[in-house]
Length: 220
Image 1 (cartoon, rainbow, N blue to C red):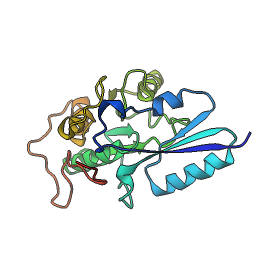
Image 2 (cartoon, helix red, strand yellow):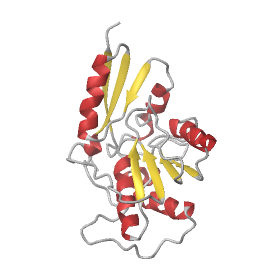
Image 3 (cartoon, one colour):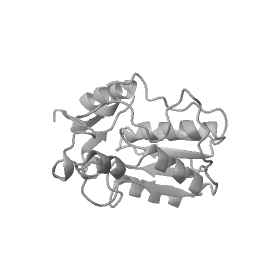
Image 4 (cartoon, rainbow, N blue to C red):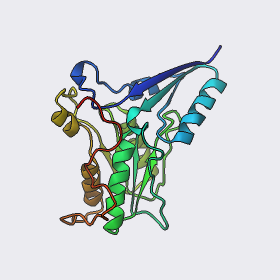
């Protein structure tokens, strides 16, 4: 059979509301024979297309438009053992990176691991408390399955975050609140580590505060 490659552009900020705003990466990833890529780094995007055209079968490549205007997503480069790790999909990687930046300046090293091939679905570091952030509903989603695998392997603590099990609102303010934010991810790390978050956050002047949107600007 010849390879079939489907390219999908996804994002937020279009104001599409509940009629055109579902996340299908988990649904497609559960179908045997369909390989789902969710690249956020330039080199990962190129490798995704290379692998898709080399294999026989169906590949779906999901591209979050929020990363189009960025040369890099700025994944943290850690020296030493992280206190926690965040695994996530798509443009939620940007929110995780913002949260990790603030945490670093508050004395907490936090690694960010983008899941860019749902078929591979890595287990990450088994000795580090883990937060999994999904861009779609947690219920029956891929992060819920990954959390079960991590707990089975003995990860000390696993927390799964995602949008509420309800349709996405069309209003911009409600849409922003619907997705997991950088601030919520940061608070989840403090909760997992049983620590109290400082107020206000000790952020370097050149850094973007958690919760501030970056990247592509939609009609809002």
